[in-house]
Image 1 (tube, rainbow, N blue to C red):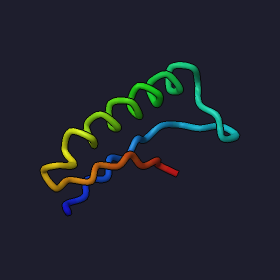
Image 2: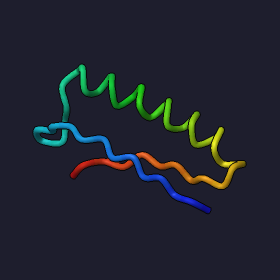
Image 3: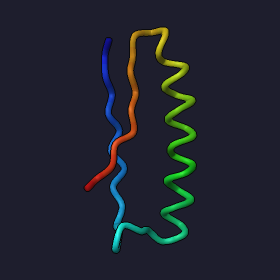
Length: 52
């Protein structure tokens, strides 16, 4: 299986992000989950990482 790790880079302060980044992160998680489901039958494992 092929793996694609997508790294989301954002700024955190004390483990928290601003509202815009939180909303973006939520939307990104949803899109990556749908993309991963669509690509799995083709042999791709798509994962969302974090820039820590």
